[in-house]
Image 1 (cartoon, rainbow, N blue to C red):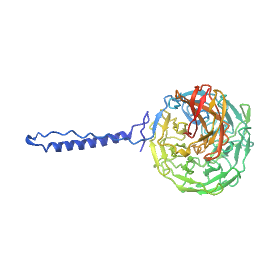
Image 2 (tube, rainbow, N blue to C red; image 1 turned 60 degrees about the horizontal axis):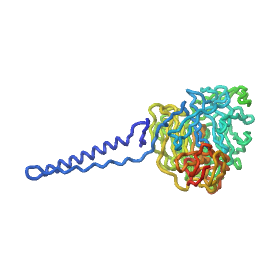
Image 3 (cartoon, one colour; image 1 turned 120 degrees about the vertical axis):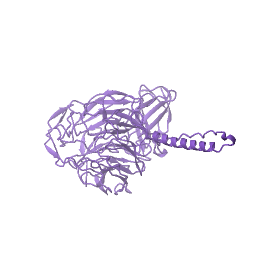
Image 4 (cartoon, rainbow, N blue to C red; image 1 turned 135 degrees about the vertical axis):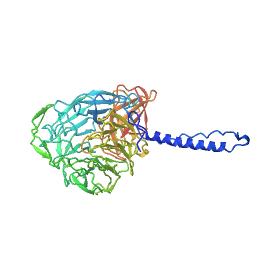
Amino acid sequence: MDADQSAGFGADSISRRRFVRGAAATGASSMLALALAGCGGAGGTAARPAPTPTPTPTATPVPTRQALANQPPEAVLLALLLTDGTVMAQAEPTAHSAADFFRLTPDANGSYLAGRWSRMSSPPTGYAPYAGAQAVLADGRALFVGGEYNQDNYGIPFAPSGLTNMSAVYDPVADSWRMIAPPPGMPYIGDVPSAVLTDGRFIFGSKLDKTLWALDPETLLWSPLVSTGKNDNFAEEGFTLLPSGSILVVDMVNVPQTEHYLPGTGAWIQDGPTPQSLASPTDYPAGIAYGPAPVQVVGGVTYGPGPRGVYAAPGEMGPAILRPDGSVFAAGSAVSGAAGHTAIYRLGATPGVAGSWTAGPDFPVGDNAGDSSAVLLISGNVLVAGVSGALYEFDGTTLTRTFAAPSGGGSSEFSTLMLPLPTGQVLVLQPGVLPSASIYTPLGSAQAGWAPTILTAPGAVLRGQTYPLSGTQLNGLSQAAAYGDEFANATNYPLVRITNNASGHVFYARTHGHSSMGVATGALVVSTNFDVPAATETGAASLVVVANGIASAGVAVMVG
């Protein structure tokens, strides 16, 4: 059933059922009263008993969805959670420019629902990427790699600036961008599958061939990775980081095969087929022309030239999310009007051993998750958006629609993107509808064993200073967010939240220098550093680490 859709998101079906049940109960009480009246004594004037009060049914708890009090200045789609607790959002460029970026800052009580928006700096002129690869690095910077489209040219065939090989890193402290030279001999990147490895290196798989590249976050230099035994190229595929540090891929060209990559050896391990296809066929059987890429100097870095070519677009795939039980829920695409399939992956005994697949529940007929967004909820459920704009929760067995497709839009590709927030809620962005930005508050809570644990932390801190912290499971149990091949916005890194005991006001301390970017790291001790904001209120406070929306137990800290 659909959830209670308040704050401009539709009528409540539960309230209608409550009215019917109440009317039926009231009618039964009236009939009983008439029967008793007919059994009266002399003169037929028996006392009329008071009707039994009809109990008010208790509404079944449901997830809720509320529009942000302050909507973004422009419709935004891509959103990244920065390590200072703010959200970096990129404008949806069909009506604006992909060079427009905005920051959402929670209010003094830590509420994103009542947060405020501010404009961020734009990349250097010439790089306005859309539908590329992104990541938040271990040092707290945001990385943007490639782009299926660039410079606000959106169309098929690709403009010469499309499938760009440009990249840039954003420094949230300085509010500045730095362009990155392309991988040697790599004239095109485009929208590619990507991930941050446990050691902090960013990797992506080539859209046009089987090459795999890694970026050193310190030197910002690219290097090719050993990649042996890959079934097909990486076009339209997605990367899912596993607890072992391996990368799971559902093949897009070699449907319905799957495989996972071992970074330590460079080998691909075959995981066999999914029970049913999770891919939809291409809309462009003749391929899509691209190039020639011109020579351009952007931000002091030279890009191009690049040759002409034809991209053999294979179709679309859905997102895949690692769950706390170690399984991966993969949501599939489908041809228009058909039901998308899903599948559940379980790890092999060791990283070098193949995993296994079982069938999951189907989407309702007419909906699927092709090139859609999915996030991990703190309950362990997966929230996934259909191409219709409807929202569904997978609880390990059942796929339940919690919100119907919006009536004002949201039925086109790239219509919905979701981001887990440190409050345990989810930011939902749907540029095709009004209001376009909302907060999804799920039911349920995290199991105690899923939370980060603080082992060492300072008992006293000074505003404006940096301090170390260590603990276990500081990166969470999953990347917690996925969107097929592009719009990557994983949140597997620690945030530090300081709450003043007297006022209850919330302050996020920017984290950086994480010793690991793995997931489900168990007993491994992970360290990070945090910068105490200058605006933090002084006095007694509680400090927690948050990963994927789940907070650790608090430790006492005195802020001076």
